[in-house]
Length: 111
Length: 114
Image (cartoon, rainbow over all chains, first blue to last red; front, side, top):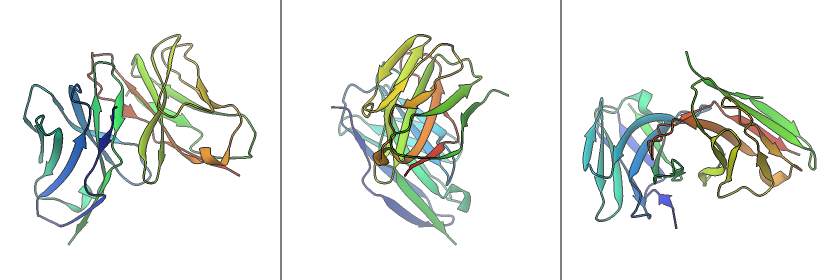
C-alpha cells in the first residue's frame, strides 16, 4: 500500500554543516515527491519537489535526490542555519493529486 | 495576497458534541484536503475534495465528514466528538495538475476533546 517513512526521527547538526534527511517510500508507482518544512506552531511549508523522471533537483541551499531503484528520497541542506531547525516531511503522490506524508524528522541546529 | 485560513485556531469541546472546523482559501484551488497531525504519526489524510460537490475519504475518515458547496470552503465536521479526535488539524489546498501537488497549508486548528 501507500506509505512513506523516515529513517531518523531526530537529526542534530552543527551550524554551518550540511544536513541530510532521508525518506523511504513504498509505492513504486509514485511519480511526484515533495519536501515540506514545519516550524513549531505552523503549517507545513513547501521546500522543494521532484518528479520521478529526475534524479536530482537543486534549489536555494537545498538539493533533493531521488533513487527510484531503492525507493529512497533525501533532502540535503547546505550550510545549515539555526532557522533551518524544524520538522521535515517528505510526501509522495500519484496522479491522484493526493499527498501521503511520512512521520517527519526533527532537525536541530546547534551553534 | 492569496491565502488559506482556518478557524478557530484553538477549540475545546466535550465528548459527544458536534464540532465544525472551517477552512477557507482564496487561491482558487480545486483541490482541498484535511489532515490530522498526532505525535508519532505525522500528517494523516482525513478527507479530500477535487472540486465542488466532490468529496472523498482518506485513510482516517471515520467520525468525520466534509462538504464542498463552493471552491473556497471545505468545512470539516466531527459528528460526535471523541477523545481520540484530540489533535491538530490542518487544511490544505492545491491546484489540479495530474499529480502536481504543491499544496499550501493553513496554520492549523488545535482541537481538544474533554
